[in-house]
Image (cartoon, rainbow, N blue to C red; front, side, top):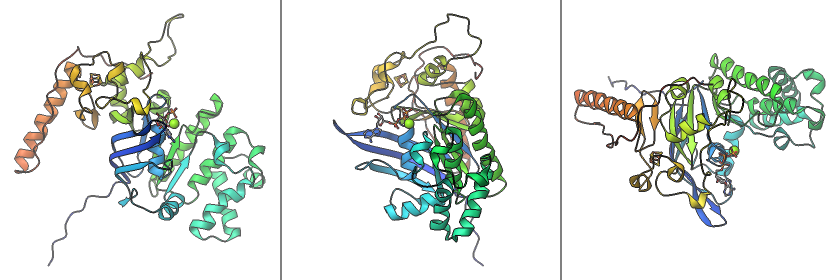
Length: 377
Ligand SMILES: Nc1ncnc2c1ncn2[C@@H]1O[C@H](COP(=O)(O)OP(=O)(O)OP(=O)(O)O)[C@@H](O)[C@H]1O
Ligand code: SF4
Ligand SMILES: [Mg+2]
């Protein structure tokens, strides 16, 4: 009788060594380099970083909505399907059914010439083949699910008749219409009033949590706001210069910030309780233009610890705790020791398991003392 082989479950989303080259006024330039991450069903993952570090380009790459002329290499797999090689028509089908996106500005996502009920019903008719009446009934159910007040009366409203927060709820309803496996939200609350921001974020969090009982929709959330990340996502990926410079479980990364950029980003955040007149720390310099990105560590021009070897090549990822990885050649001593200890354990495990699979880490010179753990906000 043939033996049944164990097949590990396919992750919801697996991005491996993603590189995106865009056409700029100064010629082709890499907007993303060696971006890798995995999102399980029902999982939540956040991308943070300064303006221009590649967060939206990552989101657009996932959705297959990159600017014309963009070249993509590496792999993006959604539920085991490779997206980078799909035709535009295939991607279009998948976008409506399996992926939903919420953009920063709801007015640009909605068509001002169509009533909102029609806009929610459209993907249901197109991708699920529902009749007009069934799609309208489902549109109402979705508006109620995103807690739009007076949902029934508002089915026939025009986008301009709604407030910004209400419009964003409609955009979320459209994104959820076909029950996507993946929801990508790019700064979904930045254009809203502060009071509404919390409501919309709570809504997104609740929707993802509710879905865990069912198919387990995954969330990729983009935000500048570290507090939002702390409250909303399980894993955080810090981006700089088109690559992920640090990633880890949210609580672990917030308390043990290892990359000099992450440390600078947290030091620069405004916080309650600072003494009057306290000047916030800033990271000197600016995020480089794409065409000016250095070949080596993208943070080299602004890093207080830069050394000559930082400029040679993109630093490899080093694991400093389970699931916590950093791209830096000159980590604090404590992090460096943790990386070596983990690598030694992994090597011992691999050796015990058999001849294949020994691991190695690059040698990591010590450059400065351990930074103490600090609270999240
Ligand atoms: N269509 C385009 N053509 C050329 N370069 C682009 C294009 N879109 C974005 N870029 C460049 O790609 C880099 C990353 O942009 P991206 O929009 O991903 O930044 P971001 O992290 O989302 O920033 P923000 O927080 O301001 O939204 C930037 O240098 C930007 O100028
Ligand atoms: S690799 Fe070098 S330049 Fe880059 S963050 Fe580390 S110390 Fe700074
Ligand atoms: Mg953006």
